[in-house]
Length: 112
Image (tube, rainbow, N blue to C red; front, side, top):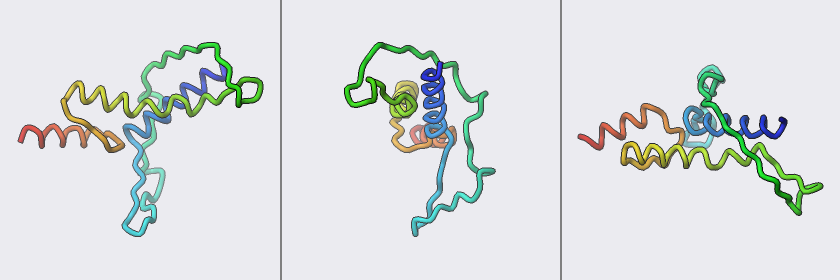
């Protein structure tokens, strides 16, 4: 049960980074995102139903064969989402977050 929660949380975090979260940095490298009020985080309603499956494995470097679970689902989410958008639109998105404004602009520029 705890591992499932770790995976679902990792997917939620990855979807937030993929779709919403933007940290703005100025030319001096200082963060200009001033407050969480302007920082979009995913909410429960934003999350799709997640199906989690586990396999019996063992990790020789982890204690008693254990391995981390919360970071594992983070990496594949953005590439999978970008590939789905590419299949749907024919446009390759390589910058995060992939906001609906960026998708609209890319589609509009492609047809112009």
